[in-house]
Length: 337
Ligand code: AHG
Ligand code: MN
Ligand code: MN
Image (cartoon, rainbow, N blue to C red; front, side):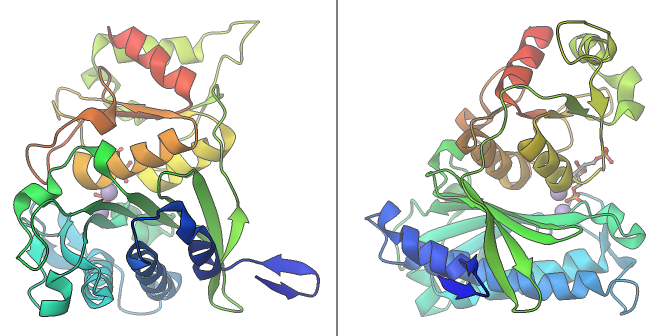
């Protein structure tokens, strides 16, 4: 910890080292992995802050496996985080939104890595060209195949409850890194003057009730009946409760989730006639956000069951997603029953 003109600075690396004792089985490997993600996030942040000035906005002219146009920043962020994870020596392979299959790290050091990472290197990428905040999301597991061998697809298909860590970065009015290793949720804000993520939101707890609902109401006609009823419920006047709620939707999962995490509220991306499994990907969007939600005292569901209990069948499998204040998520499940 550094004290600079009476303002205590706990950097991300200080904090990770301090909390090393939280996981006796790890001899600093997870700490090193988290630190590498933090360093790479600073590099991506620099590029995002100049988007519009450097040739980094707009389409990359390629389509990813989801059939979505890749933005240049998607491709840039994917490369920066992939290189950082490969060089960490703690990670034996990754799954990323930008690649059809998992990426095996074949060099000897990486092969001995204990962890695998699934990531959405740039979340909310349709917003980049219009200066709306975007994010990066990471889900970290211990591998289940033997160390020293090449990582396998099954390493990436573990249920979310097996995560050892989840991280998101939000490139917003300030740049923040929020993570959990299963011992609560802590938030760090990048201080550009010293280039460090500094502890700014220790032990984040999300209110059990909130007054914000976040959903793309443009899809209203395609929603299941229970969700249509829930939206009307949010908009009704009820004297002894906070309703009508406020509607807030940015179109970047990380930003919408982060605001609701701090203020209370619920994020909804339902299944709908156009996307029967919803839009968000279970492995590298729903699971890490669900882990953080639960660790902050919130909840995350696919409308019937706990997100973290779902066993993924494939890397890019989609899931309906409801996450945030516990009572609000459970009420949505009731509307859907
Ligand atoms: P990505 O940019 O990684 O594809 O993710 C975009 C996701 C998520 O960030 C956001 O909540 C959702 O897409 C918004 O979808 P709609 O535009 O359909 O509302
Ligand atoms: Mn995304
Ligand atoms: Mn993405």
